[in-house]
Length: 219
Image (cartoon, rainbow, N blue to C red; front, side, top):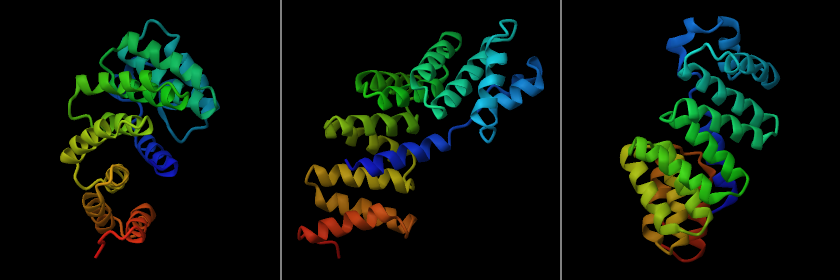
């Protein structure tokens, strides 16, 4: 697995994560703190302060405080405090053990620390909660691939793409996995499909070029 495409995948998925899924409960928290906490475009330092106000108010319902821990953890990651972020995600899960985004984020943070087993455990728990959780499948597949467990990685990508067959980035990564496993024909099919969806996808173009240089039939 190329490191660049793995970083690209994580960055793209993380950027798309929903913030503040307890928004329906906003009336139970001071509007300014709650809104500041959950606004991804707000400076990390301000989100950190506002989220702290939310999580420390023990009179608030568990789901709202768990959401505060999620968003405070994200702010801490942005400020370089990965361990602090993990601690927040863990506290959030104590309040709301079914909150899959907390497993996603903690798993990514563990992966950042090189703790692959813990990352896989978190992604797996999210999948147990929702077997069609494509984000968790993609993240777990990335971690498996980074560990050289390409069979399991491929299974996760097959499942994720069965749910969302038009995910160009996932197609490129599955193509890389198949290419690494020596499955040139199916890798080519993935790269071609990714280019149909995103004609400017540099990784798909590079994949086809690599296989062409090896003598694979990319016509």
